[in-house]
Image 1: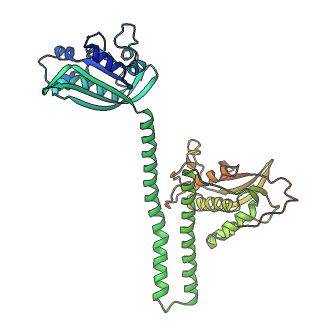
Image 2: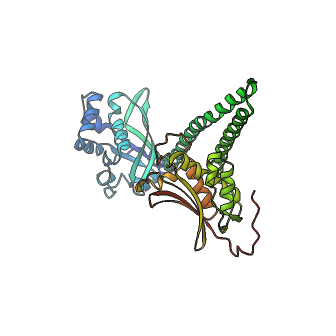
Image 3: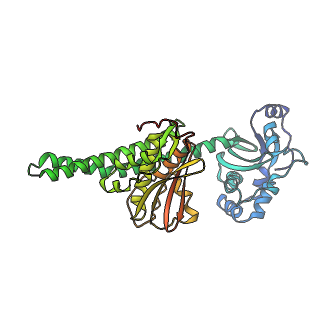
Length: 398
């Protein structure tokens, strides 16, 4: 916008003290330029002719601008002002601004007197997202096109916060959907088998024992899901805490596997020299349980669990003979709600296990990584070794 149109001194004085970016402009040159054309025809021309749009950008006459407008865009009343439209604006870079400008320029031909648009605009301060309020002063029901008021409110932080909120809500919706699906299967088994135990008097003792073991296992599965969800909720709220005591990686892994189904108990690491680290025993068990469960659901059939040491760190390694995870996807598997199957399993899951394992590892000043060695996928938990482990009494399992 260029040029100068004088109005009363009162208007200039009023605009000069407005604390927001505000511009008063005269749009009659646009009406003159497209005299006799219909609104739809003008819009079509501006949408498809970049040169005509650039020409139209220079037609409105600036009448008055607040200091905040000048701070953002430069003074439209000065020939020395930076021409931001020439230097920065293009429909490809700023599609929302492109649509907003065309709405404004075609408003006189549609009889539109009020517009509210949100767009990102190039300014002297860099790109700023604004909510632009565009309004024509109406006198006795007649729009005064030489008195158009534009107010651009900075909503950059608001839009960023809104995007974060929408992302959070989307995650919660996915979580609710995943949780209901994940819990439904074991819960249906519990209800079904409990009803069978209650109603069937002709079951043998072995059959009853088998049903009871299934009930216990399915109940344990639901408990594990709830534990993972609590960790995720506390982590999101910044309230996740872990203890820092002596912990034997092998003993905690063995205890976690012991609580799983009978088939998994063969994975208990063989007795070797204890690997004494600093961490939270309950959280180490949660990590071990998740890693074994992940290998069972998504890895190859031959699973191994072992412990090891390296300078300054103890290692808990859960491996399987499933295919390697592609290099470009290896970090992504630790993101929440990501589900990647290394094998042929289609077992549904929350997609939280690996994310929670790494979160807990980091909280204990350790790490969780993936590697592929000698035909095996390995998830490696590293925790800091306990100083003077041979002399310090090992903390009891919780």
